[in-house]
Amino acid sequence: MPIPQRLTEAIRPYLLALRSYLRCPTAPPDFSSSMGQPSAITEVTDRATLLTKTRKPIRGLDGTQVRVRHDDAAARQAPPTIGAALSSIVAYSASPPRDGTPCFPERAELHRSFGALCDALYDDAELALRMLDGGGYKTYELPELQTQVKNGWRARDLPFREFFFLAELVRRSLDVIGLIESKPQDFDGWSALEPEVVAQLSELRGRERHSYVATAYLNGPLCDFSSPSVLASSLDASIGPVKIRQATDKYLTNAIESVGYAAHLPPGLESCNTIIEFSLRVAVLAPPVTFELLYPRATDLVTRALDVLRVVSGGDIGVSLLRIDTDELSAPTIRETYHERFSPLLGPYLPRRAAFGAPNLPALDEKELASVAALFSRHLVNRDIQGFTIAVQRFRDAWERHWPTSPERLLDIAIALEAIFLNDGDDKELRFRLALRAARFLEPPGAARASLFDAVRSLYDLRSKIAHGADLSQSSKLELAMRTAPVILRRSLEKMLRGDGPDGRRGDDLKAWWKQLELS
Image (cartoon, rainbow, N blue to C red; front, side, top):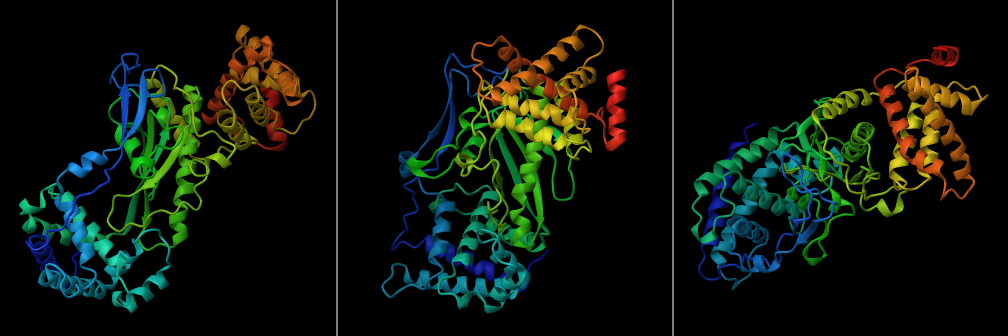
């Protein structure tokens, strides 16, 4: 959407003032930075395990280490760039120069043109609302923003929002035209910069929805393919395709917390090999709660995808971190008010693990990927099976609250199996009926059915002993149950997700369904 003519006419004088100050010989500003941006680097030795096709190292295994590199020395020695230079000068333009200030005429014109540009911005109420709304966290309701626009930028002592907005506008425009790394003294891209600034403002003025990207960091399953694989197409107007892909060092770098020598990766990311990502869209100028609910929406979607990945691939896989970011001009930062399940800040206070072990080999194959996609599409809709929600929650607890070697996870697995196989309310012969129904549901007649019957019955007995603190350290039945019980639960949930369970049945209808299965 085109911006008003007055605003277009105010952009050129401001860019000319930036250029004049940049070229001022009296006191050339120091635009170098003493603190470099940290980056994540995956280091490998000859003992590293590589994926078969892409030959990428598998993090979490011997011979592979993720290190956060600090390039402060290199940053101090690096020549300044036009991006850093103009960002600094924009900050100078917000306040008038004092007498005797070096480059006084240039500073005075810079401040005057800054004021004229801000006046033009506030003349366009629609654009001013978007500018103010995107200054950090989404905080204000629309009436509050409208009041701020009406009062104007001169009502505040220092126009922080305005010069931050203009600095980001200039930086983004330089990046788009490919000149952000140019040397300030050699920069001659002003003729290309001006139309891009106009284009960026036009895009913001006409934008109907802000776009964000939700990124979940997993230790596995391994993805031995270079391009992302789509697990689900766009779910609705607010959620884009859900994709799974390899985790590169670029993704890990984006997750680094803090700066300087305090920079570090959140717990668990040293074993990160897999990324789940999807876009989120929310209406411009929507209420703050709409933005705050993006984290719960993203968490629910990632959790369901994780359920299916665990069902199909098994292994000790989990999510260590979930982030929601944006690369749009003046899109509000998402406040983490309701970010709980995969938050590194709350991780120490929640009964779940943030770190998971090395992923299972081999990597997902095409058949497994197709199975994940098919189950995920069905799991996006809650199954209408009595007890299924409880079973899924206990399935998650078995993977996230306990280590794979902990016998206590059998408690959650047993509860999950009871929730779906003993969901008709009959309280007689629970041990027998649980084993019978699970065996008949999962196996055809024969030795495998009998073996599964014995395994579930043994699990039922072990569950009681574990709950009452029995010493099972030397128990061969415990060792067998630790291997077989997770597989039985995964297979049960998979069949339920595929629609083979008692969907939509309640009361006598549910009892009749189970009776027919028992007699089959």
